[in-house]
Image (cartoon, rainbow, N blue to C red; front, top):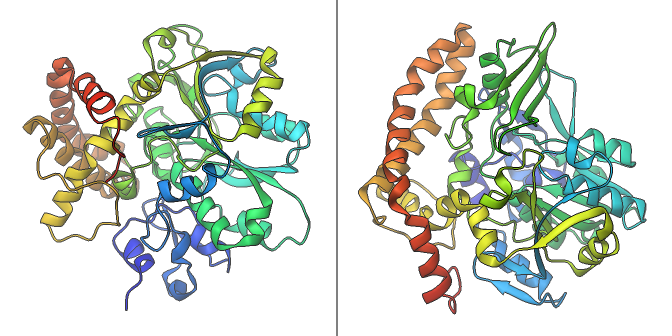
Length: 460
């Protein structure tokens, strides 16, 4: 009898996190598309109860309710989940904001919980000077190591090796784990499954995520920037500009012999809204706001903050211990309270894709007799306009084609092969987006969702 973990892997829903491999340290392998997957020769050794896309594990809201109802968190939103405080802000002290992707809040708080003895180490993504692996999960034990890991990594990473060491470590060391929403869910499922780990992971920090990229995404950006995609030593996907809007950042790359800094908007791969080299699982993820994380950080994509190129975070606080640390050191921060509506609007694209449109993608899968991981959302046979349905079909087409086209481009040594074959559906997608920008569809939906249905659960 097939288990869900078998279906997840065989139907390409694996996000490569490594949760299923960690307990028994089943090796991770990298496929030809730059994705980590478990070694299927050891599939019987994998733990499906901790996979974020397996029905064998509890869903995000079930895990979150177990955690935060016990902590007596004061507030609950149908869309944001449990929370005690909602902020926008940035770090005033040190170089955290300057060196960080956004307002510098994540690395600042990690440094504080280490500095104040709340934890012994930080499990997070760090840089590697290795063309085959530019980023990886590791443990930082001092502030210098934490700060050296600043900046976003639009890059696949696997935490199985690090978590295996933590699970089997006999010491009483405690850690904070940092990850995107599905990784946070996996850690919570692992903590539920493995009591030893539950005692060691003291905090879970969530980083909001539009979708996960493969390793090949870094190669695409670098190749467009006139670097050798196979000999990269460094990439910064979001180097800050000294002027313009907070979204107008630069791509900075270094290969074995040269360096390039270019405006992200000048690159085909620079439009993150286009699903180049995206994981399939991300089209079937409902976790907008990292519901299982003690504190959540994202970009404040709101009109009042977008004109500041230094960057501003949104912050969702769930764990009162973390909230107290923010309060104790608030003189180092600039914080403004936000409403639930502002938090949702700050992530409007992700909200629309994961909450409004996922039901239609599930419907298309079912229509084509394709297996879909168990989801909380209801199936939607139709979206509110034919344009939105076309957009979803085009996005799926681009996601699926991009992996094969880029692999072929690498094999040929010709980036133009990728560009000329992917540009047609991208132009069609952009045309559809342009024609719907004046629809105010999200505004209408939010009024409905936050007003008429405010007394209902998000997923029924």
